[in-house]
Every structure is written in structure tokens, then in C-alpha cells.
Length: 342
Image (cartoon, rainbow, N blue to C red; front, side, top):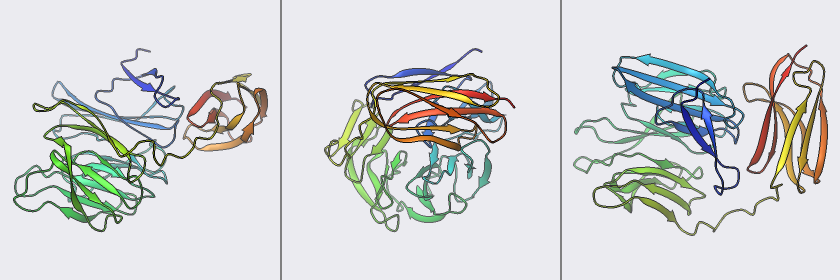
């Protein structure tokens, strides 16, 4: 199989990075996740007069991928935005001309919904629970940027904010909602549209570093601390900007093993499989089995484990097929694909 695209993965807070292949061409991919191992990637590119739309899902941290949506069309304006996930597992992906994609099974099946109030170039971002916000760019001088809110996982939307007539077009792009009360949409106008009461009211905050330049990302630890990435413009260079002291408000980390190994045998198996893992030091771990939909089938161990070699035997009671054994400890994890044959 020929690989065309790469993505980078870190398990130690960004100190080291591991590059992994994707089994299909992905131009300017956008990534979000339901868990450390469950990834959703979208990509759109235009070539030879056609638009190409792709959605891929991985449930083993990018070791293997499944193409869950593919479309090749000559229709202008067809695209896929960045995936947004809620705490209850709903996934929304913005598209063009009021269309957006919705999944409630981990991204393996998609419904295409339409709302005439959500026009071209909308960006959907999620906060906590199953609440989503969307910024809408109508692309005309007479109808300005708007924000809508959904409290039912994207099934319906309510208008919450609009620019005033005569204002400079803000072009809201990147957004972050660190908790259920606070949220920001960064704009090209050098400010941010923000809420601090769960979307009931909205105001304008001055943000000097994003004047007339492309914002490439925004993330918050909590309502006071976070980072933004700015691209290069004609008047200023790009850079990384921090809000507050990034070390304040971070919860102490649980002690986790810095290194561990995971193996299974026999594989394939027809009655039971031995799962062996080794830890270099004691720490909190979870060893569990997942199906191909990313659903946990059985937790084999969860708690504090001593250093050294451990072995667990799993005898499945369900249907035959492919499963994944995952060993996780904080940000560290390993997965192994196993095949159950009856």
C-alpha cells in the first residue's frame, strides 16, 4: 500500500514526536479526537475541476485508518471543515451553503443535515456537554457575521449574536470554549467575540496580536490560561502567544510509567488470548479491549500496577472478528490488533 500523507503524534507533552502514515491522500487535513486513541480527520481539495471530500477515523492512535466518507463532485462550494466533538460523543463537521455533517457513532456513519441560516464558510466548534456554536460568514456586505448555538447536538440552532451594520467585517475563524460558561471567537479585525455566561450574552474583547493576519489555532487550559498561534502577515511576523501564566491552574499529574510494552499471543486465536505487558515503574494504568467502532468491550485491569511483567488472559464471549487491546497510562498508550476466530 502506498502512503501519501503523514501526521505527528506525541505521548510526552510534545518533547518527542512520532510520524505516522495515512493510507490515502489528505490535503490540508483537519483533526479532532474523541479520546487519545480515537481520531477523526477531514480533508478537502480541488483538482481537475472537481472537489474531493474525505473523512477518516482511527481508533488506535493512527496505526490503522478507516475511510468513512468519500465524495468526488464538480459542485463548487463543497468542502469539509474541522471536526468538532462533544463530551457525549456527537461529532459535527461544517460544510458549505448551510450543510453540515453529524455522527453519533464515533464517525463511522454520517448524516448530512441542512439549515438555511448556516451559510457558506461556517465553522462549528464545541463547548462542554452536547452544546455547539457556529460562526457564519454570509460572504456579502449586507449580511454580516453571525453566531448560532445548538443545545441538542446540532439538530437545531438558535441565533445568539450578529455584527452591527457598518462595522468592519470580523471574519470569525478560530474559537475555544474551555468550559460551559466561557468562549471566544478570534477575528481578523484585531478583537474577539466572547461570552462569559454560557452564550446568553456576547461582547467584544480587544486582542492586539491578531490584527489583519491569519489565526492558525486557539486552545485554553481554563477560562484564564491558553495559547493562540498567529500566521505571518504583511505587517507582522507569526508567533505563539500565551494568555496568563500557562503553569497556573494545571492539575498535578498522576504518576504514570514512562515506558511500557504490550504484546498478545496467539494471534489470531479461537478461544482465549494471552495479553502480556511490562512496566518500568509503578503507576496508574488501564488495560481494555475495544471493538472496531471504538466501543469498550471489556476492562481487563484498571488501577495502580507494580513495575515488571504482567499477564492477563481474555476469553471473549461476543462475536468473532477484529478487536483492539489498549494499554493506557495518562498520555502514554499502546494498542494491539487481535483477530478472534470461532
